[in-house]
Length: 533
Image 1 (cartoon, rainbow, N blue to C red):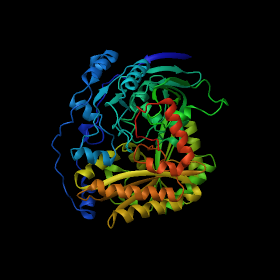
Image 2: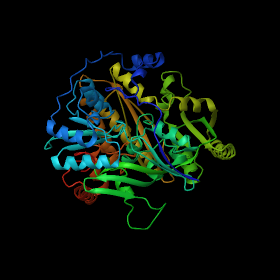
Image 3: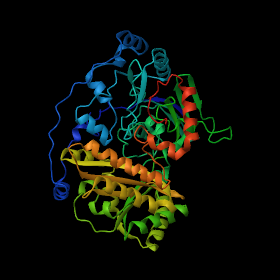
Image 4: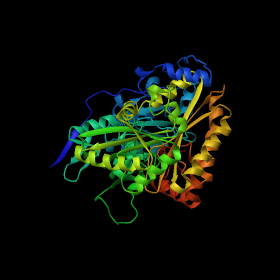
């Protein structure tokens, strides 16, 4: 039966820490085993917490603020320091290093909170009229500079905070689709869908704080992508507010009505318009979830097994493989980092669905993996991974606290190019960061034709940690481009990856993006400086 709803989450939203990842109540020191490992490898440099720095004064004219209040209500136009601080930048290591150094120059002049599509459209009309830059804000989890817009030449810059747009608008149980507003965080969306007996199944590492709109705007990919698909593969419809009007897309599951314009807005990072509703394909809630571990003698053997499963159409819901270094450190089990490892490479597989289907898929996958030389480790490693699957960003912050530079980057390539990509990026990072650098890698998204590589990097932080990391990131990006891989598989372009985008899509491709931007946003108010080369 079809059902139209207007449900909102039942709980208040917890704001992320302004200069760390996640829940402020979860700020914890390194576990003892991890602290011992760090002390042995890098030494410890406990860094005192920075005293709170004053946010630069808002530069938005009071008459413009009054106009915004007239559009949204004064309660939804915020200029206080605390709110503006919370809407400054994202959560990459460079973002946090700048925040921790007292640099809040990117703080918005105001935070505005529309409650529906019409109010979003009204704010965009106002912004065009007064030439004010607009940065759409969902969960604030960007790790590629996607919230660091250019503000020069504008009368001000506002954060368009979608925190009030948290409704489950409609559920179609016959077609198995649901329409969600963009401000819903991952857990909020899953809770609303669960009440309908449904799930989206999208669980990126940012799941606890990232939003539906952000998933769409960045072409997100979750840890269960092998079973549920990337987020862009789940989207069947979009409603978008642009400076030139509304775009509504998605009249059928598939069509041949010219190029698919949904794909134009998926991954557009707020540069073409503001996504105000997303219609997604949903599944029945799984009755059973099982996660387990496998041991492989080498990363090459484990990756070959993944490729075999993918090309045979036998992928489980979750599949990820840590290389030898990541396995040795136990990064797949954050609570056990620094503890003893059995060597080789750790693979995690997961199965979700009805018990009979889970049993059949698990048996088939087990037969293939065992036949290729994998050694089953049982459910304990898989459950440990599932328990800590969203914890790694907290570990990054704890490492920064003791003077260790830690950051991640990701890419993807065809299977025939993976070995060169792995060696090229790892070598570039090690060469740039110097002796003692730790470079770890895992595969977490797998396709018939290729896979992603996700690198985690650690090195003793220099006095200028930002100046230490940026050349290393550039070297890794150059290595990615040199072997013909993508500059980003799921983190998006933002400002950090923009210098390498033209090399990937070509100058003509870049000019197409500029033409679309010019047509939809002729005055350039939307997230200026982000994405578009």
